[in-house]
Amino acid sequence: MTPHETAAALPYLELSRSIEKLLTDKAVVVPARLVQALPGGASLFVMPAHDATLAITKVITFTPCNAGTDRATIHGDILVFEIATGRRINLLDGPTVTARRTAAVSLLAAQQLCALRTGSKPEGPMLIVGAGVQGHAHLSRDADHEAGDLLQAGLDVSQFPSLREIIISPNEVRNLNNDGPIFFKSCGWAGWDLAAARAVQLLPLSTT
Image (tube, rainbow, N blue to C red; front, side, top):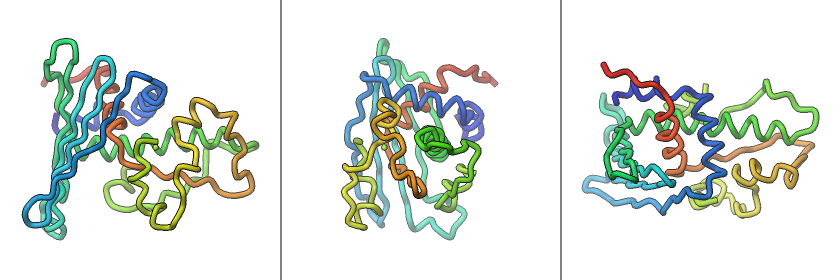
């Protein structure tokens, strides 16, 4: 799919619901990602994941020297396979999926965290910290090591409830930090990409 087709196949609400379902699916397996350094300072990222029926691999390149040119710094695709037959059944634009699923994760987190706060209103306000593609798109435990800014601040991220824990056991974290703002840190995780692949399977796609 082209970036436009990928975006059209992933409405935010449907994608957010798919992410919520994935977090309660015990069949989901997300191995550690592979990062391979490339000549010239670029990197190759390989991120697999699967559930009982689908297997995906997200393959992207990150080329910092493209910054300031008309070339994007991130290129890549998500390959989607049917486990029963081994067939490749979809090819999604990687950067588009990354932008949309990251925003959908934040949407789900905002809904879930708001429900934990007594007297809070789901209509907002919410502050988005970020810029570029992720910031515009907005307008979890396997990935603890991805929370670089929290780790650099010396915080023990294992002490914070994950989005999965909030969805499965909301009563255990209800009214957490009730006197202050709620902070949600989204980390890169191939499970989000698998949720996107699952959401696409449920939507009618154009054959043109």
